[in-house]
Length: 133
Length: 133
DNA sequence: GCTTGACCTTACCAAGGGGGCAAGGTTGAT
DNA sequence: ATCAACCTTGCCCCCTTGGTAAGGTCAAGC
Image 1 (cartoon, rainbow over the protein chains, first blue to last red):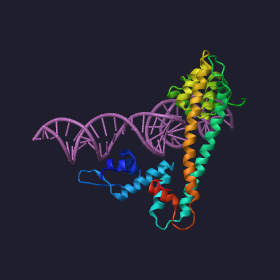
Image 2 (tube, rainbow over the protein chains, first blue to last red):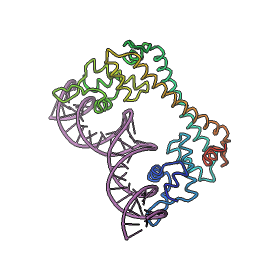
Image 3 (cartoon, each protein chain N blue to C red):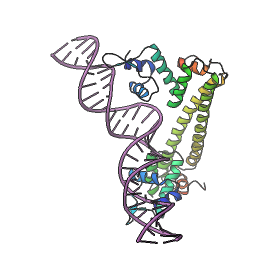
Image 4 (spheres, rainbow over the protein chains, first blue to last red):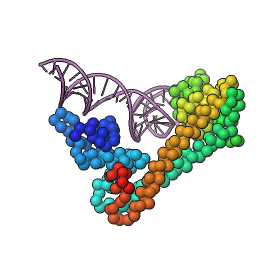
C-alpha cells in the first residue's frame, strides 16, 4: 500500500506520515523499486494509533512514549496511566488558564456599551494594565 | 529610555519589542546617535497596552487592530466590543474542545487499573480508534 | 506510442511567539 | 585601561502543519 492509501486509511495526511518518519516517531517505511514507501497492516495500525493519540491531544513526544509502551508486552498499565494522567493535568492547567482569560474578557465585554461612542472599558483596561477595573 | 529600560517597564522582553517593530505592529522607535532605540512615555504606554492585550490572549493581529482602535478617537465602542467578543467566542471554542478531550481521557484514566500488569483500556482505546470504549 | 491525470519523491517557505547565541559597538564605573 | 553591562544586527532553533515547486512513475484511454 502506498502512502496515499495509508493516509486515507489512517486519517493522517501523507505529509504528516513523512514528517513522523523524518523525526523518528515511526521507523522508516519500506521502499519499492520505484522509491515509493509502502505500508502493511501493522504499519497502518501504528499510524491509526498515532492519529487517535494526536486527536486526544497528546504531544508527539508523548505519542512516542505511548507507542513504546504499546509495543512493550511487559509494560505496566501504571506507566500508561501515569502518562495519560499527566496529560489530563496539563489539560486542566490550560483549561483553567483559558477560563480565567475568558472570564476577565467576558466581564470587560459585558461592561462595554457597544454603541457608536468611543468610550470603552475594554480599552481602558488595556490602557491601565487591568489594575483598576 | 533605552530598550532594556522600556522592556522592564512594560513587562515585554527587549527581543519582543524589536520583533513587534520588525513585523510592523509598532512604528519603528527613534534612534539616538549611537544607533540605540529610544522610547518615551507614549511609546511605553503603547508597549504596556500590547503586553496587557497579549496577556489577555489576543493574537498579534488582534492586538494590531486594538491598537488602531485605541489610537482612533472617533472609534465606536461597538467595534472594540465586537473584536473582544469574537475573541471570547474563540476562547470558548477552544475551552470546549479541550474539556472534551480531558473528559474522554479522564474516563480512560479512571478505568485503567494502573498496576504492574500490561492490560490497559487507554492503549485499547488508542488501538481501536476510540470507536468502542 | 502518446497523452493525461493521479500519484509519488525531495526540498523549501510560512506561520506564532518567542529563546538563545554570536560578533561587534557603546557606555559608565572603577 | 579595563571590565561589566548594555545595545546592535543576524542567524538558527523550538513545534506541527499546510502549501508549493520541480521532477519521477504508474495506469488508463486513445
